[in-house]
Image 1 (cartoon, helix red, strand yellow):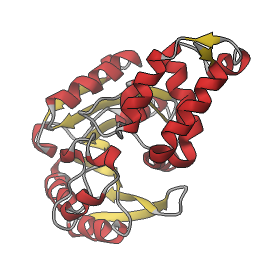
Image 2 (cartoon, helix red, strand yellow):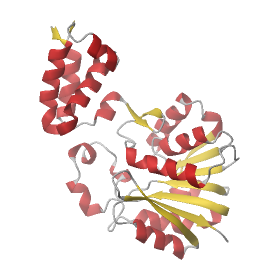
Image 3 (cartoon, rainbow, N blue to C red):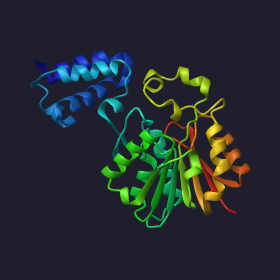
Image 4 (cartoon, rainbow, N blue to C red):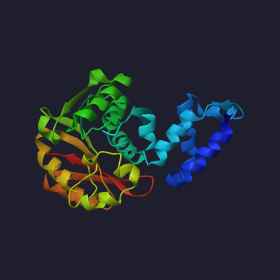
Length: 280
């Protein structure tokens, strides 16, 4: 057996080719998971020895490009850790721009809003929104039954099962009511670009959650054609978009009678959220 410090150094070196600048962080994450220790404990007991077999097994998985989030089974998003699997898109920090925009444009946290999440996946968007709006209720729709199982697990963990309904649906087809807020992070990668994605995305995340058709905009077209009958007056519609897609999505919304409120950039300065409003 070797000390924790020594094993962390070895793990970092092994992870460097796949993790790059994040190798040290990933080594700590995997070690904490392997040994059931906090990050603080790794530092405090760095000179203690541990059996390295569990850590070695996790590092081997990561070296094969399996995402850390899937190895750990969870990913932090907004204020909570969400269960993830190969059946859902791993939540990303860029998507937190959606929640920030919602809170800014609809600041009344006690409002009795009805929310719709199209392509809910892990449920990270709708559940984070419901956590902030304590009187709101939500509906999460997804074509994948397996994804809905992960979303239900997250809803239970966050004690939100009573305020969210989850249904299998091809976009809006299972929506039977009208909504005040719509959130959606649909697939927006052009089909021909998927082969060039990083291996941890291309090999381990569901292609159905990535493939946005020939130009990356096909899902937006379908959603915006179906959505207006399900919107209350003044409804706010927030879309996450890929780089250079914001203006096109805004134009698709305008064609269906939705007014562009703003386009919001993420922390990297990329136009990430298109905010639309529906007024009959």
